Length: 311
Image 1: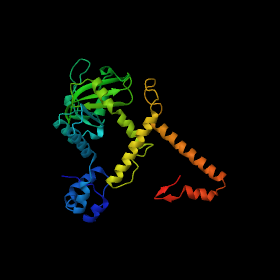
Image 2: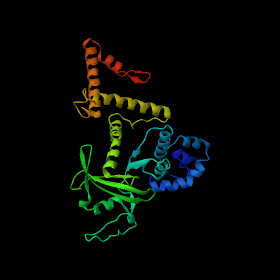
Image 3: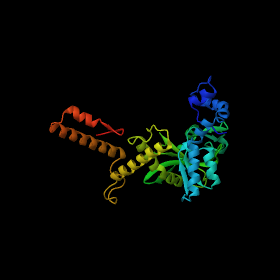
Image 4: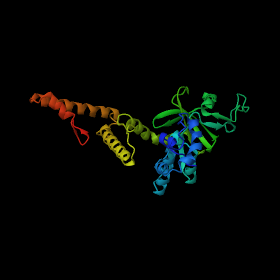
């Protein structure tokens, strides 16, 4: 069944006595009750046809990339997209994949073999356990150093079985030899790959993470308030172009002499902001120096032409 993007007016029109709950489980129960009725409404069906979940969009991107014969050796994504539907599409297309694994994801404990100091098997009490509960049970001497990109990680890798995903390989990675503090868990369908290969391949996604951080921070990528697809597309394009131009200003003049960027995107944004303020101050100073009344200067600064504030 297709899940409707429920809105207050959609529920009120057909179920005026109901109130949209905020709890996730309660909303799922509400979907089962109202979706069959709401989807019969032509107005809401037309609106629903424009709605796509993140999982649906991810599947569409994979299918489109394969259809366009985009060269792809392995698909990497974060834990949000590690859903059964996405994995099934990749399996059907015979695509290898690597993802982050949420620490509350359940593993079949029968696939996790533990032994005591004498080498005897140590069964786990529950048939399924969260990854976060199993990591503390891994002895420190089971971790091995793995060097990737000039950085050494201490990793434990094991083939396990995850419900809805089947047999996979996980890599538990710490940044220190003491295997303390924060850790990252990667998972892949390739049970024959080493920890070094899994980490090095997932590293290719790091520029995507930094783009999300920069675009949603100083560039305001997530702050648009438009409803039409055309308006959203324009905003996205502007953010992407701004990011590309700012990234160019962050590159060293002689790449062979300097590794990486000479400044961050945030530094570049602040530099541009200071330049705009300087120009504004110089403009106001010049106007006042030539005898222009302050009130007239302010009227000019805050005048609107076609919805645009003149600065």
